[in-house]
Image (cartoon, rainbow, N blue to C red; front, side):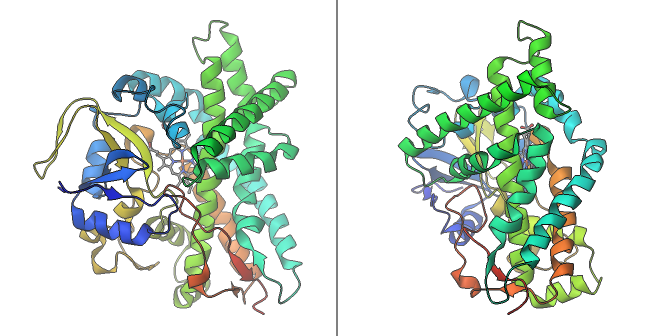
Length: 409
Ligand code: HEM
């Protein structure tokens, strides 16, 4: 347990690898500075699993983070991450109520029903990439990794297509943890405006979509006992934010890993390793969400190594470092190996807040990755790997751009 100066986490995401090494060296839970808030960065998978299922750990700042909201709201650039009115920031029965309302929309039946749309959307995007002139780089982040989830979530929510670009822009800024407080505040206001516009459109013209279903849940009981207006907005915001950037990063990182490990790609192309295994290794190797803000100790929690997380202290789930933990994955933890036997990771979280969209995200990747690599046998990066720049974020783990030459030249 480290008692020294907290490890400062770089909000631009440029120090990810060095920070993971420092976390592993510092112990299962390390004191770290998250843009001015001191947190316990939990990076050991066993401890993380314990805490994520411990009722003494809450995600509700109103009840369990002393000083919230006075010290945080409008004063901390990441306040949107902890203040949304939705399941993400709820605890106990409130969490169960909010999660139950939308979980049917993400079950296997609904995901299977969406599959033909995922395939059609992907096929259209791959056709557009194929039309690129030889020698002209294509940014796969913009041409594939972003639009697949953006369009799928758009259809799920009944979002008018002309709103998608605006939503994409505000979500990018939510994940940009280097944004100034002023920019974060302006972005938050714009985001709420877009959510209200979406809700107004579906309220006027309901459809067979999740937004209309949530509005019905809100309006059925006029007293808001099932879903308040704030929770309706908060839940829509959560689905858009959680569904866009994360899946984009999974596609971006899986493609990057394969293009920079030609032996692994050859193995996959030959049918030696199924795509499902590639997806799990990509999730482990480059967790799309590196760190997840924030949790709070409801009461003192003694840690297995003798330390204590005091009531009211904050906990950061360091999913990226957990996936690369040498205690679990040995000396090769930092390597991309689609054949490794143990690919365990916590990249979709664990316990009551386990990612609701995990089956959908896996399904999107299982369609998009083979579609890309089958269509472009010669595809390669258009720049040396060390010229790829990370997204400016300590939460979102992707690249600012992913230039490739789809035709290999
Ligand atoms: C590769 C893609 C994805 C990754 C890596 C990912 C990751 C995560 C993680 C780590 C959590 C747990 C947060 C915590 O620690 O409390 C989470 C929760 C959540 N995710 Fe995902 N996610 C992905 C895709 C999606 C998609 C496509 C959707 C929906 C369209 C979605 C919706 C949610 C929701 C609603 C929660 C909150 C669950 C709760 O608090 O009970 N996610 N996700």
